[in-house]
Length: 111
Image (cartoon, rainbow, N blue to C red; front, side, top):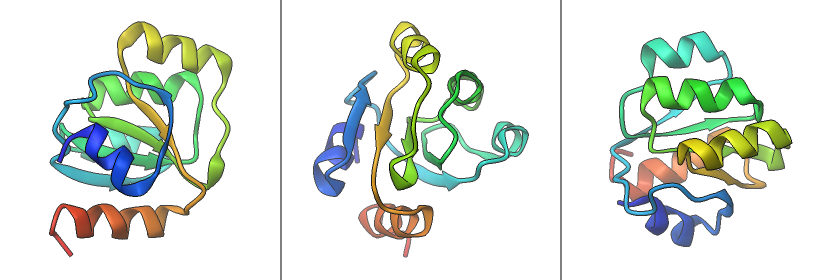
């Protein structure tokens, strides 16, 4: 599944669209940034409520396919600008992390 397909399937809000054709190979849900660096897999759709510039840096380090801000979490203007500069996809949903994780798992056929 690609990022653009995920956006369409889940009705996600696009804040910044990087590579819309990037493959999503899994999912990861966590708000502890150091934990994400060490445990998220390349290609994961990363679900978090943290929308600051450090989130963009962690996404780059972990090579996630996209960031999904759960529960309509806000994103700092600096983070948006950095995501645009770095080509990091940032999406948003009103759903919580559990709901998003379940739906992504269903779409990827892992649950």
